[in-house]
Image (cartoon, rainbow, N blue to C red; front, side, top):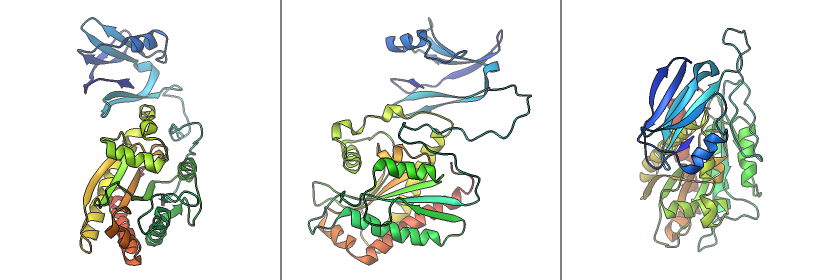
Length: 344
């Protein structure tokens, strides 16, 4: 993964003697630290990265050393990713079916490869719980109670769908570490992860819904929401974005998470607007822990602002809880209908 200071496109060409693929970034120069890494052998042999006098940066991929490759770019921050499937044995040698490509994770989160299955596993994650009350409204309504009520309703709705298995990170008022929530979803081979939260804002006038997927926060407000939900200081919440490892699954996870977020948001706005005046804050990105360390398409839904007196009142009504769960259900099932193949 090459971190860039602007968006750029790599030009591919084939070369011989030896046979290799050359990826070139025109009008580009390596920083001193990047040059030092390249010279110290940070690139695994026989692949190499060099600086030419053009100026250009070239990445050389000997064709005898890989089974397949692809290159793509990511934004915010801009990066060029070269994804390589190593050639671990001769192509002509008979071999059993390949195991699922390992999903990178921090040392504390060790996802296991899911077994072959003909059903879709959805993990619902009611935010907070136990000693962690989450946000609290002026009438002392606690976020942890609302998220659990919505989560249980959503579980009941999804459980009626054929071919769907629904699991919850918590189904009662108990504290669960963020790390354990991610670890649970990964270990269960989940296909989707939906975290339910209630928003809060210093201004009691702000209200509405917003859906997040993992990424770098685009504004200070999104970063503040992630800091509150992660339970981390604002100035350290964004740290860790650079550890987003690009592997064969990362791009698909990001794209699917984005699609799930938009589908859920549109369903919520459409369904809820028939009963309530919904402020649509859109789809956003932020470095939420549970979205970063889950290996499947994941979203975090902020369903209302408990800091707004009107929305706190709605959150205390069973009919509103049912409507929120129904809206999320419609979004999830719409996503599943459009993505029947393997989601992982």
